[in-house]
Amino acid sequence: QVKRKLVAGKDYPVTEITAGMDPAEKRRVRIANAKAKSAAYKALKESGQDMVAAAPVASAPAAAAPSGPTAEQAAAAAGIEPPQLIEITDDMDPADVRKARIANSKANSAYKKALKAAGIDPSAPSAASAPAPVASAPAPAPEPTPAPAATAVPNDIPKPDLIEITDDMDPNDVRKARIANAKAASAYKKALKAAGIDPSTVEI
Image 1: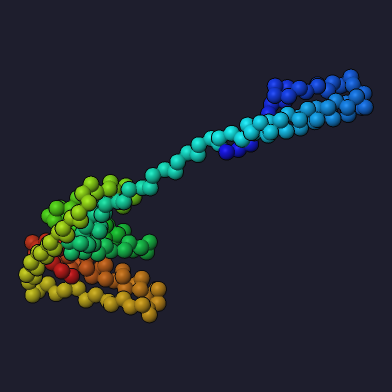
Image 2: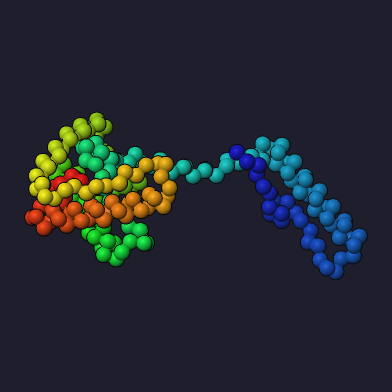
């Protein structure tokens, strides 16, 4: 409840002050108006009607519904690892950039294919927009998808000699190692393709 407000001229009489009044007359009118206002509020309080109900406060919006699992979370539950993408840097040759983009695209495609095989929608919404699950009982976790059998690689195609990147390496050395590894992996995949082998089925 809040205090009720009275309207001047409606709930109590008010004398209008005009520019033609002299200062003494204006002062008398102000005092008379103040007394009329005070008397009106006093009478209102004595009548017990000086308090009115406050306006209802708008209720807070309902909390957001819990989100469902994202495609990444479902993939992790199914034992499907995310694709290992090649980092593209500004100092790479245009040909290497193109090869890296193609390799990354193939890795993403193979990842999405594995998700679909496990019954997971690759375009599943993110956690912020996923609808809340209707069923209260937790859904059983999907069984891990068996990894595809590794394709036999001919002995004349040696695996790339990748440089191990450690935490104590200089940033410049890390960058050089990544570029060298990307080039070695690209050459290895090119040799596999020439031998009629799908690089996505061979573990590097």
